Length: 289
Figure 1 (cartoon, rainbow, N blue to C red):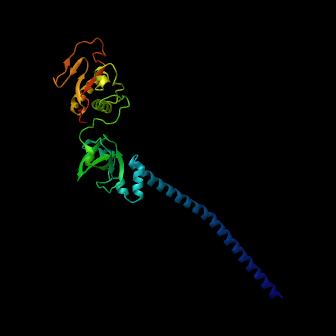
Figure 2: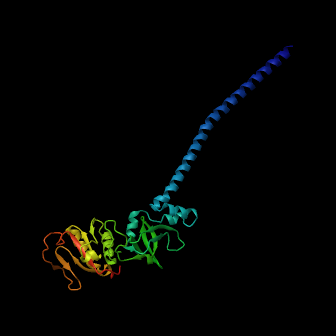
């Protein structure tokens, strides 16, 4: 009987110890879970943040490097025609690009010019230059190609699309009407409008007889300093624009009879004496521009 009692008591103590050990283990597991869950959440948050940062770093790089040509570059990157190294040419900064510039040229007026990533017809087109647009060029050339600096990066344009001569202007002038004007007079209007955007008033075809009535004359309303520059510009380009003669500040320049300005008689008012405008008279349609 005593032995049975002792055995039961020993069994009870053992059962209690086992129960206590199990409870302690469960408590430790709950603590580990509480610790692991925040850490896992933190790691997940870090992973998501890292992905966002990487996506943001990769995404804007296209538009930043292209400076407005992002859609063309993005399409070229997507279909594999352009690599990241081609998109972002190896120049450390804008100052380095400036050092490569050796001069400037102009896009010919007859057509726009495509800007290529490399000197190759199969290279993607990254931008389009407008007719007459001025571009910075380097000394680097390849067969049929000229390197330019576009958006502070080295790019390539076909040499046939560029010219050393500044175009005279082929676009209609928003400040002056071409109605009733002869082809040469239109050439003068467009050229002056493109080169001197500060001019805001022109006098073209009108009734009353004379060269204005026939569309061969154009009055360019200007201040004295601008008028001097415009008169010199028209003299320099007289063959291309079909200039017959100029009148400016009570003087006339008619190259058929004299290469010098000659004084004119007083006509009674500043406007009649051409003190406030350059009068350009054209042949009609002999210009070569």
